[in-house]
Image 1 (cartoon, rainbow over the protein chains, first blue to last red):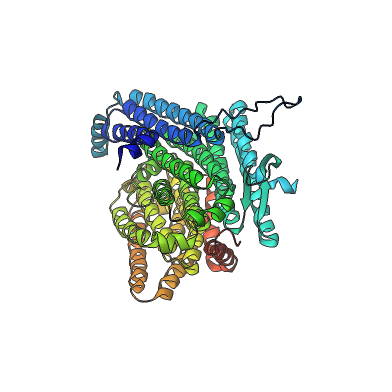
Image 2 (tube, helix red, strand yellow):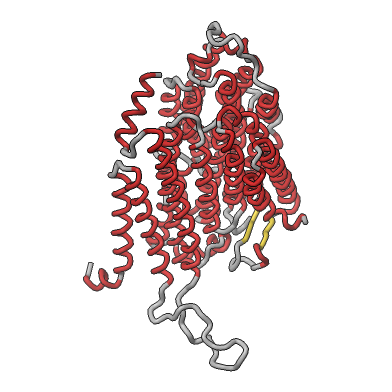
Length: 133
Length: 495
């Protein structure tokens, strides 16, 4: 694998790094809030994957440059970035916020019910309840 | 009007959901939910009739023609799944009105129905849409409302179950988004039919294969295929009863539909089975799921949890049918989607009646209930027999086609047929444990315990009778399922 390959795909390396960091936090941390943060990092890496896919080298933002009513230059030879991934990710960001807020709301309720946010303590309390049944 | 049925299918529950909050009164919100879910069922039946008579229905949202705009595309496969989801939604909604009175705080009941309708809307949306990104959006609508619904359970463990489901479900959904993104890079389209047409040109690229893997793992997390099922038992055991009945009969079914749609319609049977070896991956997982989860179910003391483990095993049967890679196998899968929805719906609703009267579903607490709540327990027995696969119930029809599919392939596949028979006996064991306690032991609880109210019994028995009706007259259902299986095996392009 040459350095050139590494450098020309740097956006993917960033995405993979972030994805793995998020996934690792999600799996390894016992604190429920940290888990949600990990989930956020994980999801954000996917947003970056999408957005970097839509980028075209030298492309402009996808905005009509000329005045549609007056004359002006034709727009055909303007290279612009693909706007669709951005739009998709706007939706995905909204979904991500909704997921985070539901997760945090659940964490608040769990804290009220169990008095802790640490997974191992919650498991211990649950094992005790189960044994008591 | 009738040309707009596809969009109304999703919009009716979506619009009714926020109205439930404004109604404030629990009963009024429930009535609205019943109204919305019944209209959804009517629309689904009309769509199935239209598809059966005239073929594929295509609807361009906002009049933007596909593949640029979002297309709703209904063929016999998703018309069938729409009817399954809408039927269960329509049966559980009236049941929920009475059931949640004992299981959910009164001030949360309107919110319960809001989340219920949103979940129904999401599941119908996943099924009806012909756009892969739209699948993700509806998936999250249904999942987020499902997390909220599960967390409404009375015990505090419902909260941790919902949280665990949220974490695993979000990871699954994110995997699906990654897969969709990679497909989009390779083809530049999100429309399912368009993807199916463009993908064969880029089959060889590693990106497509990676996308296949991400989609596979993500969807299998959602459908709780062993060993990705860890979120399911607690989520089902601690959710309020109507939620368990609804989720067990619809959410995993829709995920199975997603699997079929992505892997057979979009990627195509040839790519999935011949190039990627999907059947070789799914077959062992399905068999392990069926055997191990049936075994685990035998040793449960919480009956809801017992049935939850049984659900994971039943999902194994559906995936087993897919791994046959034949029309008969797929017919079994599609029939079992419907049949399992009927039987698990009936069983969980019967348990909801038990919770309503005695507040517990621990197996010990159910002693002697056969005499105290004869109709409820009779419903449980019929549902249980259906789960085992006794003739004259729908369970028999599914297993019949599964074994037929195995025999068709011959050779070592005979062993698979043997495993299906063996695990049916295991199902008999775990159903019998409950039946034995309920009928052969003396009642020990409160003297005031009596039969559940008719508002719970009528919906429960509606599903029980459907179990018997479609078990005796399986011609109609198996015709539709076989038609759908043929469409799936041909791929979306030729349908």
